[in-house]
Length: 240
Image (cartoon, rainbow, N blue to C red; front, side):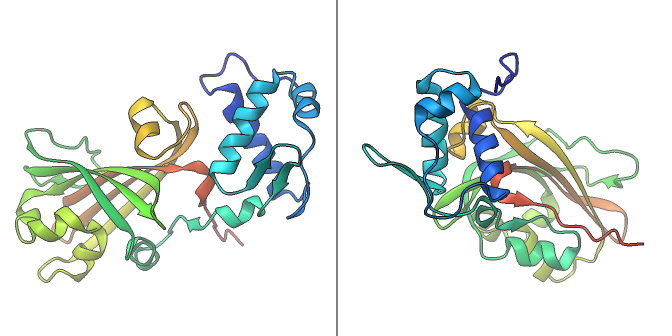
């Protein structure tokens, strides 16, 4: 089964994604052995080294265990890994991010302002730019670059530097949130992002852009969040 060799995503990452999807579909139960490396190499029409790289990716994710002389054992179903349900309302967003660990990589006062669409609202004028990595169980799973209105940042700079921003905004007196938007798209990991979240270069990411506006229509928060795609799931009820 030949994978796309023209893709920007490495072959071993594509194969890991395919094997992960097959686990999610129930192709192998927990405790079962995956086919031998040589068999998988024939199936995907790649070198055995590429299969080993794919299996190492799955092992690092905790899905399998590779043991010489024994083979590759399935440790958990792929669906177990998709613990992050993307929120579809404000309360679930606050609940999702509250308690996560944020580690700062960059904070700066910047002349930059976020690119806003007319429907987003009015610019706050001055913003503080923050970049951080979010962790769960000491494992990085997303990179977030955000602009926070400077006037709001200065109300609690220590908190904003060390904690997740959304729960602080939710609790802060004097802020009335009126509009929150969220857009979901697909991206790939560049070298910098791959290094920050321990993801393969070129691996798929779920990209989420969030904006928060107050009752005056001023955009107080804009964030681009890049999630490891294998931890994310989006559930929507679209019943008529």
